[in-house]
Image (cartoon, rainbow, N blue to C red):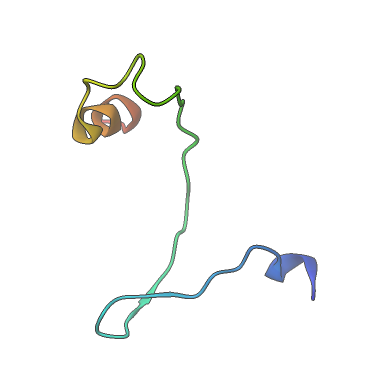
Length: 51
């Protein structure tokens, strides 16, 4: 296995179309039921993504 194949996962939709992740973001995290427990996931994403 080459170094380019390490961690490779084939992703497809229900219709069989391929999905490609072209960039990623590292998000902060906290223990379950602590600092962010009352913040909806959509609001957390808004803080992370540029406008």
